[in-house]
Image 1: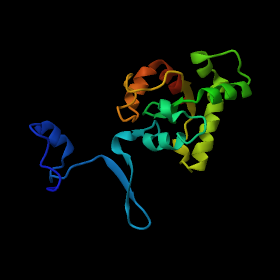
Image 2: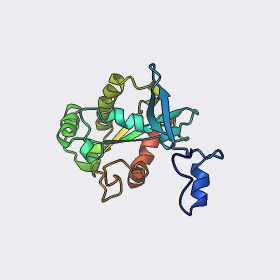
Image 3: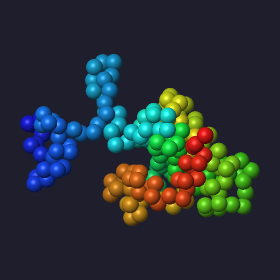
Image 4: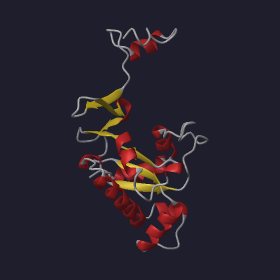
Length: 192
């Protein structure tokens, strides 16, 4: 409305894209009304993805939930969920705390592996997914938003590699691009 701005300075295309015909700015925020009538922002439109079955999932909500798992290293970027129209269920890349990941691998009977070999081991991937399942259950995440496969990653996400902003917010598309090969592995696991 008029209290915001009349548009982008000398950018009519961007103004037309972001503002409705009635002059209202479209923020892209998704909100719900709480039982007390307050508006609560829960996600961004750009973070919703449509899965193969036509259902939408909120990646940001998934990341936030899974970042609560005790194995997740949020300082290195945490969790980066992924979904698209070609897969049945979402998947995720995870930054794990190194000691916890090695202990989890040993519990799963995986020894003598490090780095990428450790992260791609099916037993390790399943053990990490089990940790995320606990966080999802505790947060009562809808079943459709439970990841069907995860892959731990070794290289931390940082502003230097473009996977985090200067304020340490996740740049999902950069993470997906950085881990393109691993993403193909996860997508195969997510398709029936």
